[in-house]
Length: 97
Image (tube, rainbow, N blue to C red; front, top):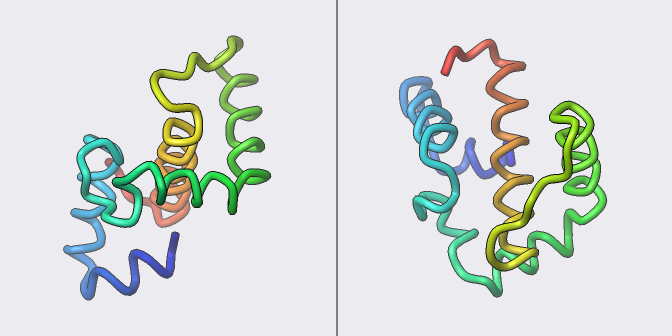
């Protein structure tokens, strides 16, 4: 995640805009070019399954309910995992988005 951001964006303004755009519009916007097609989101899900499951468990615990999957399961959770990690990094950087 951090490597993706550092490779794609070169200055603080671009990085902050990236976080704002992703957290407001999500992966479904198509802005994460490596997570557009099912082939890629399925590969991402399989590679980061354990981390995504931890994120899912934490979210369900904080929400007090089970997350309802919409559409393709692996695609849904790949996007959820990427977006939540982005939110975590933004929080750690102190970005107010």
